[in-house]
Length: 165
Image 1: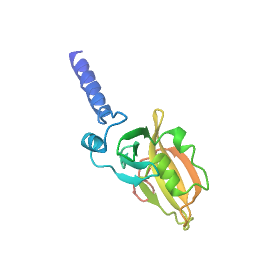
Image 2: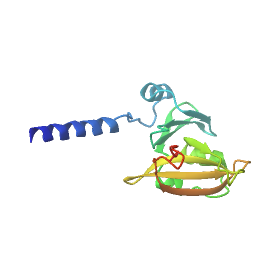
Image 3: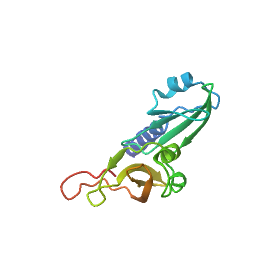
Image 4: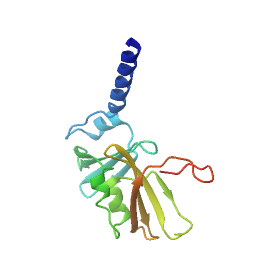
């Protein structure tokens, strides 16, 4: 019984440590404070009001944090981009820049043989308790032509290759 209790405690501590990987940020913190806490952002974009920093946990993670800074370099807001609510907002006709402003950059892209003029970007996210995949197809002008969603499937395919999601 003591072994079971010890194992349960070790598992709980491990889960808690995994959740503690992201240091909480406060509105008004400077870019230097954020960089000290979270490191170098995955992507930095200039916006009309300042900058947007993106921190992605891809390829194996399923979270993308979008941080908005004002013109003076102070943190205005932070959101988790990869949520069911946010991916559900993406529709045909959206520009790639608008998609990435809403949910962040994809972790993988692929051109399927049956749709050579469409480049599909793939996102992993957590849909409640389930790992899920979101697919966004873009035409050659970078405009959304299709979207799709499904459960994550990490099994090896017909030719022994791992599926991207």
